[in-house]
Image (cartoon, rainbow, N blue to C red; front, side):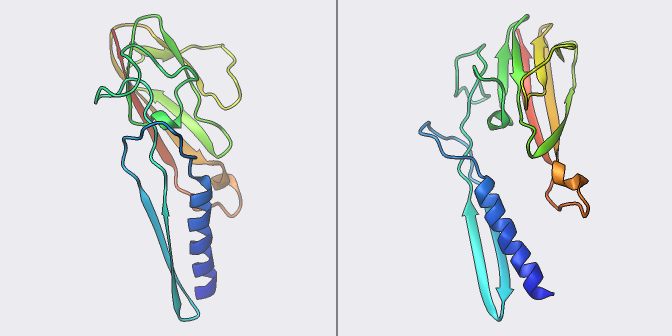
Length: 170
């Protein structure tokens, strides 16, 4: 049983390393998570540490870095924007595109009076909708990504992820 478990741990570490986003030439400002898997195979301890590259900040963040106030990423809000705060003006909109190849997304907005999803609009593959700034105020958009492999039999053990942005509408 130990060789199967240790093989799985080593495979999991390799899978996480392969799924890490590619580095860009832009400056980075977030912390670097480290994933460490350790296994014992035939009396020899094997350790694999994978350092995932930092996430590049786009848009207007609370720290004041990123794009100028009132702008959003031109290509839409993506996973790289997780945890960021954006400033919008009434009438502006953004495309939320978190992908669909690995996760099934459930999106919620805590204050739909401030931003809401535009209904009956088709969006590109991998996008979760177009969101419009309706009234001044603050709203938090939260998306839960459940791995598609959780639907397989047997289900995978990959964890769900949480995506969150804050939008201030002026």
